[in-house]
Length: 250
Ligand SMILES: [Zn+2]
Ligand SMILES: [Zn+2]
Image 1 (cartoon, protein in one colour):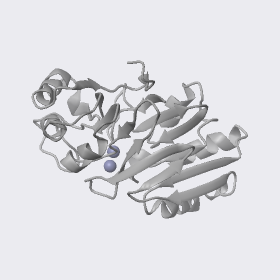
Image 2 (cartoon, helix red, strand yellow):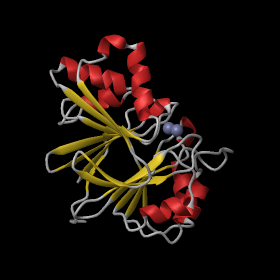
Image 3 (tube, helix red, strand yellow):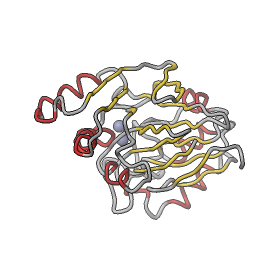
């Protein structure tokens, strides 16, 4: 499985970080996870492009995770692609209905299939996925993607807590919300120390920090130090365009 971070920013994007999006590729199949503002453009910079992004899996419905959904639908329509599948938590159907109500000239342009999932196992675009409810201001699901050489877990937006790190336990790679450095008093997202506490004792090959607010710029070293005080695994900052393979070769 190949994983590409398309967007590693938040609702406050920066020049280097657009909003949230992750592209998964395996055996010629692709799956886009979240589609915030800027993700369509980042997708156009990849080899598969938006032409191949026929399935989108949403963690939740905050704007920084769904803003480019209709722009993606329109780009696919104009590129001659005839379908789009959107999978997400409860309310995803109403979200798409509402968006297409506003932009009604896009309704019916592609064969749009919408499916709602809960905190259980399911399949999308040929990927075997399990889901776990996170702690956020709205319903949000974390996802664990199985692959033969190791799993990839994506936290979505969430506070750090043992339930979620237990869900990720044993993954080859975990990408986790680490929105803020310690000096920011925040709920619904973790600071570095809070994430470090939840990761303590967790068996994950590598952790990427993502969903990074502008407050994290210039604070990377102190954030890594805060996490590494609790967790002795490999921790790195994600960045837009970063790509890695889970192939068992490492
Ligand atoms: Zn977010
Ligand atoms: Zn959110």
